[in-house]
Every structure is written in structure tokens, then in C-alpha cells.
Length: 165
Image (cartoon, rainbow, N blue to C red):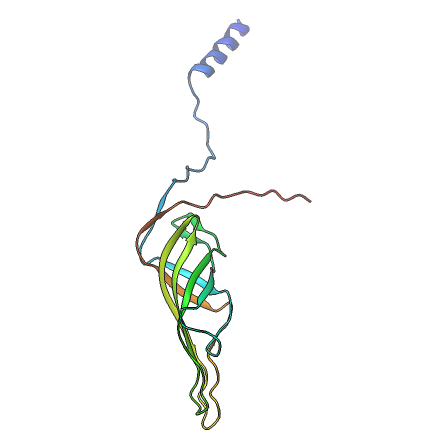
């Protein structure tokens, strides 16, 4: 009798699915929409000086922090962004300060170039009779930019590395 009850319980277990507490995360969508106006925090990748910069010169920047849509990461910190020098005025002998300005054009998100808009600039100090100082945007300087238009991008693949000790 006990054997028959055990067989019946096992058979029912195979036929009737039992609710199991699942710890699975919901599937990550293949594409997510990065909305126009989303803030993008960047950092300068190099020093730009009013003394040496030329308009049109390319400028390297990097994503300062992970870019997310909700809880989904679409670009990791350090992702490459590019811009250009739009103004570079050297300091002169009559005390006028140097000035330099950049404009940000795009951020690399996976295989996509996402159009972004943002700018940064600085001026040196003005002096009387002696040459003014140069304007310098230092590497690591924060630059705020914004997504220029809605765009669909693929989420970043999350990899879970194990630490071997």
C-alpha cells in the first residue's frame, strides 16, 4: 500500500507542475529606446589649451558613469565620445586672455554612434601690459551633454566574473 501511494505521489508530481519560487531575472530586451534629452555625464580625455588648439581639432572624451535606461545599462563608464574644438583664441601681448571652447558630437554605444549635444569652454586670466594666460580645459574635467534625438540601442551584456583567489 505504501509503495502504491509513493508511486501515485511521484506520478502526480510529474503531471501537475508545482509552483516553484523563481529567482530568474526578467529577460533583457534586445533593444531599448534612449530618449532625446537624456543627460550624459562625460569627462575630458585630454588637456585642450587655447595656445595649441585649432578649430576643427578632434577632442576625446569618455563616459563618466554607466548610461542607463531605467535599470538597463546601455553603455559602460569609459565608453568613447568625440567632439571638436570650435574656438581657440591665443592669449596676446596686450593682456587679453586665451579662450578655448569645444562641442561634443557623439557617444559610441556598442556599434552605434549616438548623437549628443554639449559644450565646454574656459578662458585664461587677463593681465594689464603683460601677456594674458592661456585657457585650458584639463583632462578629467566634467562635461555635461544630452542625447540629441530618440534612438534605439542594444543593452550591454552583463558578465559575471568569478574571483579566483
